[in-house]
Every structure is written in structure tokens, then in C-alpha cells.
Image (cartoon, rainbow, N blue to C red):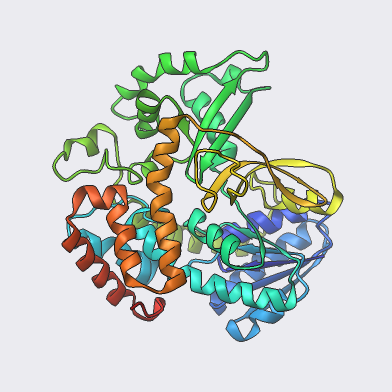
Length: 439
């Protein structure tokens, strides 16, 4: 068994996913191939993962592949390929994604999924994934590509529509959605044995049903507790609770994410909304700086004190591989193409997030049916941007980037068309060689 990790310099995430594999009897004897284009980061991951492997019994082997010239060998013969790359990193590309729009009065929180930041991140990542897919088609055509990189729906949707590689997109917001909601509302006694249905799109999938172990609908009680939380000045998750108030359902991803997926909360004409909903503007750059500094300290401590045994995380990756290898079924929330209208009131070429059964024959998405009309409408405002961004990446036409930005709910609600086009041009110029040429 060979498991290749693309972007293995993402050490903390590589440690989680590969550490999870080392916890599985079915996977622990695998060859773990680490690939990155940054030698220092790759070396750090190798040191940590080798120490973890030895601590956990010495099973399997770890191989390292540095640079584009060694990418094909990293992929050769792989059974599973895990993708966690970040093209352009925090510096310079994330900084550009925030600072250029800010000059036009457009503020963001995370900027990795939708909005102008999500659009630009997709446009610089898709060409790299095209290269991955080309290599995989030659050296591991039957491998399953597990994509963890954002913007999830755009990248996964592109891979599924325009490459021959079997692909599923994975995000851990599904696993923690109902757990976190019940915990935050003081309903921990309802956690055990709960039953749920989640479907929609990545970062805006809807908690359509939530029942306790006896089958009782928990939404009435949830809704009765929302008002008190909304009045708490220190509570951070208000946007998602506001979705319950106005759309009837809770969604999977955090409020700082969802604050920028619509036209409602980050508005220059209504600055008081930022404080009312506790919206953390420029949140992702802050996290990047903290994570970079935090990892330096953690790495030094690990070298000094040694690596402890890994406890299996909530990430789906190892569970999917295990189910494929053993044939023992496992259910995930996966990002897949809406083929056959799994969600009947979203388009077939959209990438949707739905329950999926995994077994020895791979990923089997489940038919969901129609979303509540208002939930499908909210999803469509995001899907429009996703499909146009994918079209821009496919055709290399600048007009499709303009259109994606114009139809983005947050961007379009703040800026006029001429300003949007000028901002897009400035972003393209600022990103330089991280983007292909658009005509």
C-alpha cells in the first residue's frame, strides 16, 4: 500500500492524517510518500513523522520527494493521494488576497472558499492540480485523490469534471457540526445516539434533520435557545444562529467563514454589524501568523521532548482508506459531483456535500432529494461563483473572472462593476507568475 501526501510541508495536518493511518492495522505498514516543494518544511515533516512512526511500533516506511522534478516518482504506484497544498502560501499570496481588495474597501474574514479571495486561490491552485492529475493518469491512474485544499468545491469540482482522476473532497466541518451546536447551546445530554442529515455545498451544507436517540426532533428546542445566545455580546457564532432565524437551518462551517459568503453581514454602510455579530475581519492572516510562530515553538519542543503516540483524529482520510482496503463500510460527508441530481434542486455540474458510503468499491454518494427552497437558493449564490471560477480556469478568459467576482454576493453588494473589474486586474497583476495568463 502506498499513500502519497502532496503538500507534506503542512506538518501539523500531515501528522494528523498520516498519524491516523499509523493507528490503523490495515494501513500502518504502508509506504508513506511525502512530497513538497519546500525542502525545509519537508524535512521538518519527515523528522516528526519518523519519530511518530518509531513511537507507534515502527510500522511502514517514509519516503521524501522534493521538488516538481520528483513529483511523478512520489505519485508512482500510489493507492491513495492526499492533497493539502497551498499555492503561494501566506506570504505573498494570502497577503495579496486581503490587502488588494482592502484598497477598494472590500473587507474579508477567511477568503479561502468564496469571495474574491476564494476566486483567486482557486485560479492559482487549479493549474497545479491539473499537473497532479496528468502525472497521476500516467503513474497511478486508479488512485483515489483525497482533496483537503480550499476552495473545496471549486478545486474538487474541477478535478471531477475535467480530469480522469477519482476524487472526493473532505472537510471536517461536517463531523463537528451538530456536536458543536448542541454543546454551545447547553444540550450535551442530546449528543449520544443522535441522528442527523447534512447536505448542501462545502462550508454551507445544511443540518436538515437532527433527532435524539429516541427520534425526537431537536430543532424546536434549539430554536428556543437561539435568542439568548444572540444577545450574548461575547458569543462568537452568531452568523450561523442567524441562519436558523432567517433560513430555518444551521450550516456546517463557522460564522467567520459564513459572514463573507453572502451580502448580509460585512457591509461598509452598516459598520455596526461587525460588532453586533462578532465578525473577525482579517481573521485568516492573523491565524497564519500565529500558526507559523506556534509551529516553530512546537517543533522545538518536539525535538527536545520527543514525539508522543498519536490519537486518531476526526479527519475522514484514514477511515476512507481503511474502508476501501478492508471493505468494511464507513459513512462520510463527502464533496462529490451532483451527478444524477443527488440534490434535485441544485445543478448537476455543481460540487455538493452529501452523505456517502465508502466500501471496497470506493465512494458511493447518497441521493438526498430537494433542499428547502431557501437553502438551495443560498447555495446557488455560491455555486454561481464556483462554476464561473472553474470556467475561468478552464478557458483562461479574464471575462469569466470578472463575472465570478460580479456575482459573488459579498463583492457585488459592496462594489460597482467597473471597480470590481479594476480590482480583479490589480489582483492578477499582483499575483504575477502564481497565475497563468488570462486573455
